[in-house]
Length: 273
Length: 319
Ligand SMILES: [Fe+2]
Ligand SMILES: [Fe+2]
Figure 1 (cartoon, rainbow over the protein chains, first blue to last red):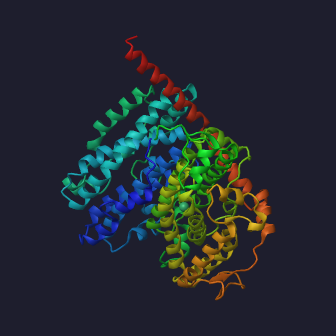
Figure 2 (cartoon, rainbow over the protein chains, first blue to last red; figure 1 turned 90 degrees about the horizontal axis):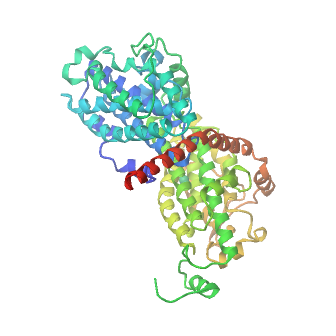
Figure 3 (cartoon, rainbow over the protein chains, first blue to last red; figure 1 turned 120 degrees about the vertical axis):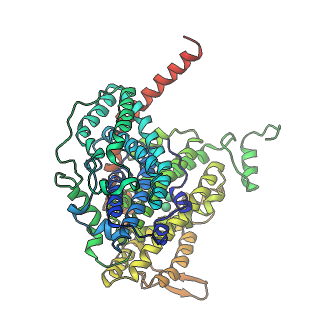
């Protein structure tokens, strides 16, 4: 269970901040920036989704835990977006609030509605395992900024993984109802898992500065499948949903998410907050 | 711990006289215990219900930095609820029972949370005025005679001052931003000023229980004293913000060395307290829904814990 230490005092003490990324004075090139956007958008959208649980979780400890995870993800998103923005002289907020649907690069897994707690945990399990494998490798990127962000995020994602694993065991082996709901969660989400491992643009151009998603597939899926089995779940027999290219062309949710997230900022363009 | 056997009323009174702490194992009068359970659990419920108006703005916060700060703040409030339920449990009432009292409408929470957070500026006003009033109320509670309560308040107060500051900063940015932003800030302060002053409870003359709480050193200052401190604190802060407070009678009183302030609308206060606030129904509804929808999750966790502890036990005895 998550600690109940103050989240606010914790975050005040952490070593690197988005401002530090900006202050490094390193300018990302366009390809790196597009890659960083993809990583940042995933975390930003998932933070937005998980934030909805705060004040609605099954128990107070989970308001705190899911809040912690959302806060970590938001922090990672801010690093990636700040870094991406150096390519175009745009701030993290320009990128988060003033890009349209077609310009986001998030995967559909994180865009899916929270559903019940079972579905949220199923998504957490898949996504945290994926991010863990990703950041573990990205920490060795030849791009020093990406490597630093990944190394910092890795420690936090390890906790996300743990949280998801513990809950999938509890739900999978808890009651009949909880096992059914967790299984339903995996069933609903499974068509969107494949997108995580697609080598979309501009991966090919980045060489060892990035981690090719396809190179993560085997290890990540192996671990996810074992986790499902340990939780007594059946690995869903579902083919990937068409359109696994992160463009949003085949996403119904992205528009709603952005409409809510961006509404106030767009009512006051140019304002500071 | 001393070897002496301290029993009953005499030792309790001795502790109170000495400004010492009463601890869970000490004897205490039933009425003292009851008062504390009520006060501490109401305080916990307020932290929990108070998450709702602010949580509504997490998804729409206008910058990522503000979103992160707000998320952390609302999460802190959940943590405050947890510390306080733990403190209340040391008095012998389990958290489930306290929670049930809230869900059944038998327990109260601070009425301020029955007002809506309509705009982003309301998030600023809540931080500055509502958390600010909470600080004025809670700093003296750090010395409350009941040990676990006082210690919980020490932890909480540290975080509350951050909460107030982030609210003040939101309003400062708005007040010094565009015309529309300034207007948004002023409007929020206009709506939250009165209800924030009422957070200290009715005037002393109408607050019959306060006397006993003060004698027990749970409460250290009267409602009106605390309210006065709060007004004295926020008047210069409002000036620094470049915002006005909606009270024509607000004026420095040289003789008293305090600000005078106008009569508050106590009819409104009591109406909201009795359930007629703009959001009473919706706040309770959302809490009940979260509880109901979490039922199967809590059952699963309990079932799993029971199964795994059985397995652990049978492994231990080699069964
Ligand atoms: Fe609090
Ligand atoms: Fe607070």
